[in-house]
Image (cartoon, rainbow, N blue to C red; front, side):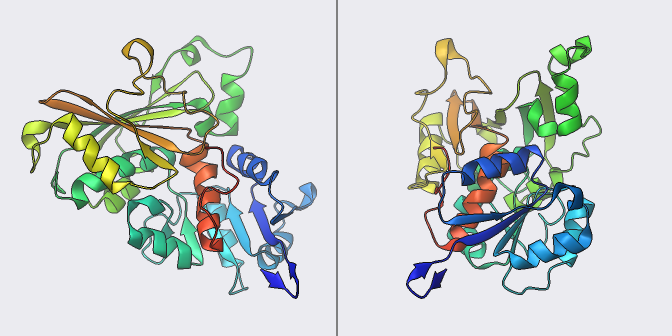
Length: 322
């Protein structure tokens, strides 16, 4: 924003700044001299009048809240120039909101750039969609392909109560082991996974939380004989490289180049970073495409800051750790 001969700072309010996503966003702003963070009095953080005042003072408000509170926050907006960036589930499948995975296509990028309402993707959904969207959009797999999605995350994505359990000296034995959940196949990320990837059926989604703080691995197994265009892993890797060419925050690795020591992939090797790596492994019959990223980075706070940067008209990676 330009004011005379001075560049005015962009005012940002983080509603829910005390949570893991909000704290990480604040960290990304510490090195920036173009941002002024509007801070709420801790005693008033649930006061709707004070929240409304700060939301409407801001150029950007980032919502790091449960769904109901995020919907309430949006209802408090009366400044037509305030941009809302919502990290909750509440608005991710709404057509009047931009979906905050701008690398998917020029259309997605332009909608993020021009919209006053931006929904930050879910962490697991980010990994699945960045893998599935190019396959469906390019006609490599049909929209009815029976996707199965095994995925593993650190416990930081489970919220403050779960973090306290995992970090308690009295934690129960089961918290020392990987734990599969969403056993009813009703995980909250499934609607956006289906809609944004352009599918006609929801995937079978198998999320697992494990005893480490952050980092995520999302896998997409593919039977080559079910492809509409059968490809080897090398050829498929080149499809992804072309789709995400020039992107700083989604990168496609050389085949096998970052497959980890002794053939292992560690789910936490992107911890602290704000971009995702895509790898293509397997053989000519069975291929596995993998997204590796930080569930608090490209899967949450990093994505929110990226979307704000695009809306501001600056480099999407500004202030991010890449």
